[in-house]
Each structure stands twice: as C-alpha cells, then as structure tokens.
Image 1 (tube, rainbow, N blue to C red):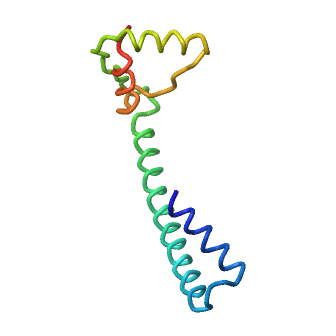
Image 2: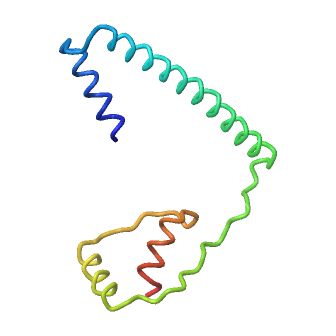
Length: 114
C-alpha cells in the first residue's frame, strides 16, 4: 500500500513537471527494470507451476485425489462469543473460508465449537 502511494505520488509529480529531469529518467528507468523483472518472474514461475499441476493431474488419470478432513475445533465458545454469534445470525452473516487455511482455523478456534 505504501509502495502504491509512493508510486502514485512520483507519477503525479512527474506529470506536473515538478521533478528534475534526471530524477524522472532515473524513476522511469528503474520502474521499467522492475516491471520487466516482475514480468519475467511471473512468466517463468506461473508456467512452471501450471505445467507441474497439469502433469500431476494427467498422471492421476483424472481420478479424484484423497480428500483431507478438516482439523477439529477444540475450544468452547464463551458467553461473549455466543452473544456475538446471535447478532451475526440476525444479520445473516456468513463465513467463507477453507479448512486448510490457518487464519480461518484460528478464527474458528476463537469462536469455539458451539
């Protein structure tokens, strides 16, 4: 977020011609190098990952993989959490998450099993 703000500020100053020409050239050249490097990393990494995923799928002959069970929720809900849950239910709130996500699991542990 800070990087985006700095980039936008630099772009605005450049468009308003308030920066010396040498600073503009340096900023543009370093920006071009960064963009090129990011594009190369994205292209090589994405391609390798996609190929590896495709090879894994083809090697399995399309058979379903073994399903994993979600980890159990081991904590109990406090009275405060139960009051919060009632308010969330009244507002039709939904939680979307993945059982393999550590942050989602932490949230479920905080809310408890009730």
